Image (cartoon, rainbow, N blue to C red):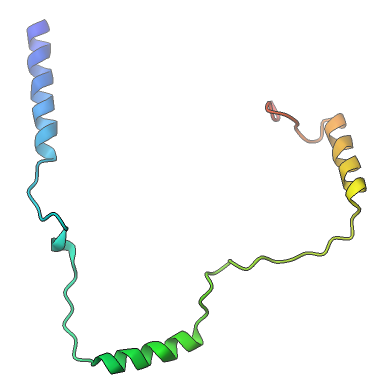
Length: 97
């Protein structure tokens, strides 16, 4: 039994090791995309300048919406303390368990 298990484990290890042993270029150049273009550098630069002027450079949703609160800090703290006392919101590490 012990000898069979050892042989099977060696075979499984050899199969696992052979899956990862594939020869390839170190820089993964087989995935590089080759481009054939007929446009000049000046044409591309002028198009990029017009596109950049019409698009926003900010990622979508990156602006923070400001909100002016009219609530009093002491009133909000008192309401939170009352909610904790009455069990409406969880408190501490136990959460709502």
